[in-house]
Amino acid sequence: MRLYKVRGGIAIPDHKEGAHSPLEELTPPAVLTVSLLQHRGASARPVVKRGELVRRGQCIGEPVGLGAPIHSPVSGKVIEVASRLHPSGFYCESVVIENDGEYVDADRPEGIADPTSVKPEVIRRRVHEAGVVGLGGAMFPTSVKLAPEGPVDTLIINGSECEPYLTCDHRVMLECTEDLIYGWQALRYALGAKRVLIAVEANKPDAIAKLKQATTGMSDVEVVTVPAVYPQGAEDVLIRRVTGRRLRARGLPAEVGCMVHNVATVLAVARALRDGEPLIKRAVTVAGSGVQRAANFWVAIGTPAGHLLDHVGRRDDIRQLIFGGPMMGQSVSSEDVPVIKGTNGLLAIAEDDVLEFTTGVCLRCGWCLDVCPVGLEPYHLARLAEAGEWHEAEAAGAMLCYECGSCSYRCPGRRPLLPLIKLAKGEILREQAAARTRSQTSGGVA
Ligand code: SF4
Ligand code: SF4
Image (cartoon, rainbow, N blue to C red; front, side, top):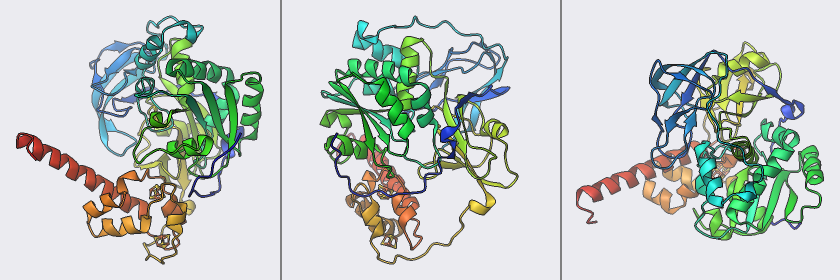
C-alpha cells in the first residue's frame, strides 16, 4: 500500500525491552482508588456512598454531560468517596474500594455474537454503558466517536505505539488478535466505513505477521506497516501517512472521512459487546531503569502505581515515576497514584538516568522547526510565552501544538520548549474562559 510523506518527527531509541513479555494477570490490591475523572469532560458523579457494598462491574460513577460511566473493578466495600491524587497531578474525587477478594460480578448484559446483527445504535449504547473511552491516552468517549458528524469511509486502527518503552499494545495485537477482529468489525459496521486499515510500526514485525495472517482473505482490511518515527501514532500524522488526507487546523478526522481508534480501545469495545464486560481493567506496561524487569500486565483500574512496582521488583534508587511514556507521559509525585482508563504505562526511572540540566539559550539551529509535525515554530512560541505575549502565541498557532515533545527532545540549546508552549496554551484558555464569563455577565453583548 502506498504511504504518504509526513513532515517532522524524530527517530528515538525505542527501549521496547518488554515486547517479549506476555501479558500477565495482576491480582488487584486490597484497596483500589477509582478516580471519577477518567474521560474527556467533567468528572463523573458518584452513585455509591461510603459503607456501600459493590459488585465487580457495578456502575459507581455516572457521567455529567460528555463522558462515560465508571464501574467498580472488584467486589467489596466503599470505604470512602473523597479527593485523591490523579495521574494528571491534581486531586480528583474518587471512590476508594476495599477489595473483598471474591470478585462477585454485577449482572451483565447479554453478549452479542455477531455485531452486524444489531442496529448501530445498539452498539453505540452498549459501548457507552460499558464506559469505553479512548485508551491511547486521550480518553475521549468512544460512543461519541461512533456518531460522527460526517460520513466515514476509512476506519484506522492505531497499532503504532510510537512512545519508547510502551509495549502493551504490541502484546494485545499478538495475544488478542481474534478479539481485535471482532472489535474492528463492530466499529466498522457502526460507522458504515468501507475499509479498515491497521497501522503498525515497522519495529513490531511479529505483530504485523500475526495480523496479516489473521486477516488473509479479508478484502476490506489491510495491515499497513508504517515507519517507526515518533509521533507516528498522533491522529493527524497517522491519517496523513496512510490516506494522504490532511486535517484542517483543529479539525476532526470525520471531516476527511476517517476515524482512528487505538488497538486497546478496539479490545475494550469487543469485550463490551461480545462479553457484556464493562471497562474495569486494561493492559499496562511497567518498565524503565528503576525496575528489575520490564513487563506487561492486565491491571484493574484503580490499582496504585506501587502495587505494579511490587510485582516487577523495584530498585531502591527510583528518582522519577511517569504515567505513560517518556515523551507525553506525566511525572507523578507518589506511588499511590492509581491507574486510570488512559494509563498505558508506568515508567520508573533510576537516579542515574534522570537528566538534570540548566536551561540554555536558542542557538538558532532551526531543528525544532524541522521536527514539528504540525509545522509550528517552537522556538518562536517559547519566546512569546516567556514574554507573556499570549495573543501573539495564539496567533502563531500555540493551540495547534499537540504536545508531542519532539521539539524539546531535539533542541541542542536545552530550551524548555514544550513546558513554555504548555504555559502559553493554559494562559490562552484562561483568557478565553474569562472573556466568555465577561460576555455572559454583560448579557452576551460583545
Ligand atoms: S532547536 Fe532549540 S536551539 Fe535550535 S532553533 Fe529551536 S529552540 Fe533554538
Ligand atoms: S510539542 Fe508541539 S511545537 Fe513541539 S514538536 Fe510537538 S507539536 Fe510541534
